[in-house]
Image (tube, rainbow, N blue to C red; front, side):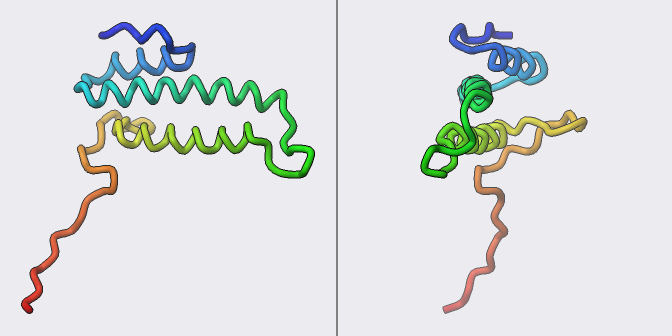
Length: 111
């Protein structure tokens, strides 16, 4: 197992170790894992910031910290989906597919 990159925080290192212990990753998947771990660390920092920040700004808009958290959570989900990590108790990795899913075969239309 590779050492976790030094720049990762607590959550990022834990995630890196857990994934590397259970799965053998190719170079592209390893890059995705590092991005996923970095995103986990950013989410931790944003959660800490949200505890100290108001929910809305003075003009009534949603706090930028909450907006950024939502966007980073979506990024985390997309990176995890691209990495094909199993969800829940089922320990098998999903099949490798493109990011947009599978496409059915179409019949050729006679012109």
